[in-house]
Amino acid sequence: MTARRLAVVLVALGVLLAGCGIPANGSPHAVPRADVPFKLLDPSPPSSTTNVPPAVAVSETIFLVGPDQHVVPVTRDVALPASLTAILGALLDGPTQAESAAGLQSFLSASSSQVSVSVSAGVATVDFRANPFQLVLDQTLAVAQVVYTATAQAGVSSVLIEIKGQPVEVPTAAGVQVGRPVTRLDYLAQAPVQPAAAPPSASTTTTTTTPPG
Image 1 (cartoon, rainbow, N blue to C red):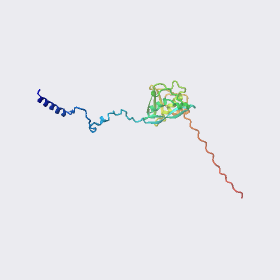
Image 2 (cartoon, helix red, strand yellow):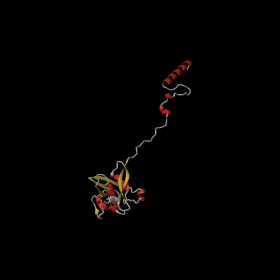
Image 3 (spheres, rainbow, N blue to C red):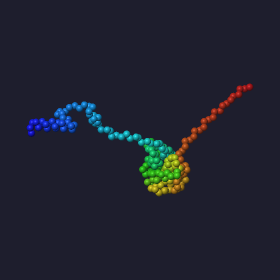
Image 4 (spheres, rainbow, N blue to C red):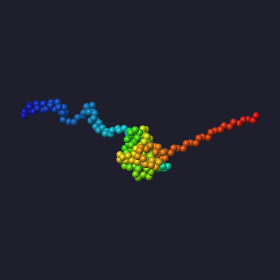
């Protein structure tokens, strides 16, 4: 190839490279900051942490057993929506350490995952997958815990106890076994003890002294 033809080829190659956007400079050179894509100036990857809103809970009432063998209302924070199943599950979790230290206990032996509840026409059907009354000291108090906890919810007036989907007879405070829905009236002997009323304050007698006439 002659020198003339070689020169022509080199010029054509240079034009082609310039058209393709490939730098024709033979040595490194500084690129203006304004020409650099923003993501290359800040290459750190975006955080993978997602802001998850905290769970919202509501305070609900459950009933434990006090030293006087009466049920005692205490509160539990139950995540919304606070279903009756979740509330009964909180009951089955038993007392906290502070409540145990104060003498409160539970006579139910099931775990929180072993109960489901449905409500129809004011009757809460409480179905246990394991018998929570089998190994307890006082089955009547155990049933009273369930009844008072369930009927603390609006729209629930009675409780039907089932074990593995089958209705069972439960003891009442009258000492009889019944297979019907039970209410708080069946466990009045286990009802929470009301605080004694404060004695009425002594009335102040005003004495009027009549001066001698």
